[in-house]
Image 1 (cartoon, rainbow, N blue to C red):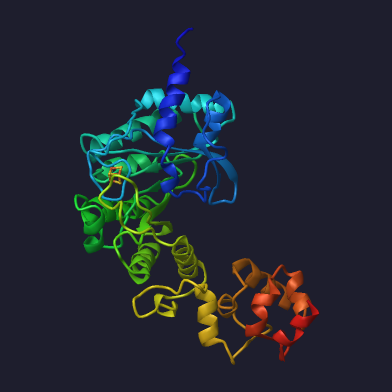
Image 2 (cartoon, helix red, strand yellow):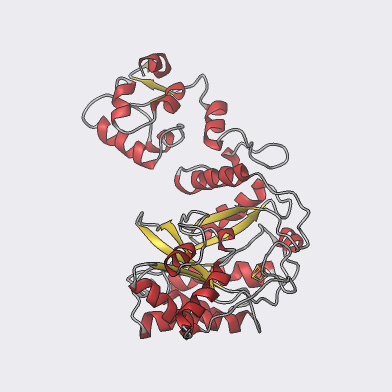
Length: 391
Ligand code: SF4
């Protein structure tokens, strides 16, 4: 039997990619395309997640770490220092070459690259930078790259990263200093995590004419461990809202806490995944629908109700008995109606230029889910919900 270094590298990749379902990115499904098994073809598929890019394009995204060795000891993390499991590390050149083999065989089109921290955040950031530079400059990779900013990275490194990536991110994990102390007492919220997100925006603003590697600066996202620090949804959304308004955060990912064996939080109860879903819905209302934090239906404890979507809860409180006339409402008002998103609102505005919308059939032809809309609107002065029986 002869030695095959490629199969060795695939084995390393398998070790490094095993827990990546904890990282949410690019609307990738939590589970890989196929379960891990032992033929080379199927092994490759297990590392690659179907993912949707911000422009709507679907790609095969390789989500992995450069190293699963980490000197930090975040309480929730499977890679924390001292936890007993088999670790692995790629050198930048080795990883870049492996990725290009996967890319050339059409097994992976884009990459999401993070790492455990060894010998400091700046040192680890250099490894990610080296990998990105080899891929872009030596191997000519022109596809999608999402590269992580390491806690402890320097501003100059963040700028170099932005020159290589389509997206950069750093996980805040918690909404503020006090909450982070419960999750990762050795991470420094402002200096290590929050400040790099501000740097990204400062760099974008200081060089508006710079076009990045593909004609624009990369977008920025972050991730929170939802429920890990007993924080409220109000705390998470306050920080998210600030970042979206002040440093152009593209979106926040929320990963519902679930305990990992052999960590200090192994006995903490898992958070209901529906909470993650409600947080996403609320963050989209803040980002795309003109909602403010004060509009959110927070309960006394600062959490969103789990049974109801926040937009529906707002409409039940504010539009019940006061339906909006579809033919008169401003765009911002249309966006407040359950069942109408930005595309639907624009379709209604376009349709109104050619005549009145008089019934639910006209709305349905615009692609709108009329059952959700009907209780909250008038169509040419008539209650729409009386027409629902026709559908
Ligand atoms: S620094 Fe990152 S990889 Fe290391 S323990 Fe913390 S969360 Fe895990």
